[in-house]
Image 1 (tube, helix red, strand yellow):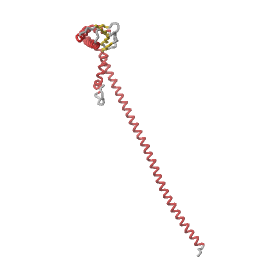
Image 2 (cartoon, helix red, strand yellow):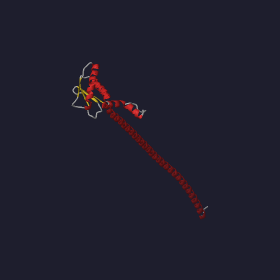
Image 3 (cartoon, rainbow, N blue to C red):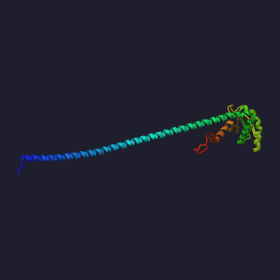
Image 4 (tube, rainbow, N blue to C red):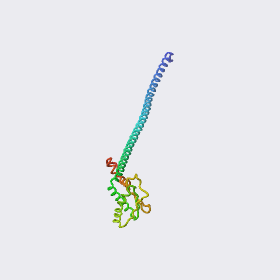
Length: 226
């Protein structure tokens, strides 16, 4: 039987209500899913940026730590170098004081003549020549003359050879030299320097490790003694 206009309108309204409800439910479902996906994406982005920030500050922290280590190492090296420089200066001062006192040895004439005899005799043995020239300070000429016969006798007793020794009178060692002699042979081609300053230099080089230990104590990190 045919539906009345009222029934048609009623069914249309019912269908529209059903469709609207379905649409609302679908829209709500879409909104929930969208909100969920938004939160997930937001969380992912936040975590991604958080990781980036943490990595950035971790790198910065490592850079700062590295800079601190470099700065600390530089300061430590500078301090070590300063200690080494100060120690070397102190050693120089000690050697200068030794050199100054060495110059006072010549004031004791008897002692100095004995030293000259040893230095000249040693030079003669080093050269093993039969004709030599001795150069000394001008103020030491007489002392050298006094000890020269004994030096020649010492040389002859050991080598069974006579040695002719000439004292230079036209050229002398500088007055700044603490004392001692230079001995020449073969027309000046061979020279032995046996001044007090030279002996001090040789002894200081040989005794430098012991001198450092005496002044500053034993270095437990030192592997070599030269």
